[in-house]
Amino acid sequence: MIEQSLFLIKPNAVSSRHVGHIITMLEEHDFAIRQMKLFRFDQELARRFYQEHLEKEFYPRLESFMCSGNTVALLLEKEHAIHELRELMGEVEPEKRKPGTIRALYGNGVTDNGAHASDSAASAIREIGIIFPEEYSK
Ligand code: CDP
Ligand code: MG
Image (cartoon, rainbow, N blue to C red; front, side, top):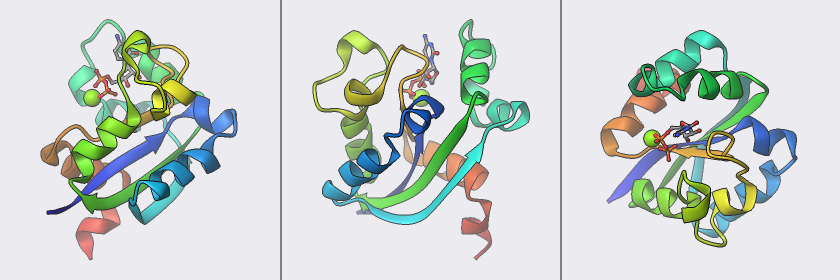
């Protein structure tokens, strides 16, 4: 089944100029780009996007990082896109990242890990609605 997923290139990977290579990796893995934009998170958007983490001890760190510079968002489409994108992105903990994954290549610490990808069909719908609201008004 063709699925859509929301992918973010986070501020550390944008500022270190890895946008081009990450998009090349996505295209080489057959993801189709349906929408794409560059923007900067503010506190309100970060709180909506990361609603499930608001009460976590790491939330202030996450918010400050996400608001620290530009993010590139892509709406991607592929067969089994959600699972495949999580695989290509790699794990949140640096020591668990498989070589060759986006986070192994362009993540720094746990927080500034270079990338985000929706973790379920429900998350994808929610996140696409936040970042590309025009998708659901077509
Ligand atoms: O991004 P992913 O779904 O892999 O991980 P998450 O557990 O849903 O956490 C969301 C984001 O919060 C991560 O991508 C990190 O940027 C940040 N985080 C953090 O700063 N410290 C942690 N201990 C866990 C997550
Ligand atoms: Mg998550």
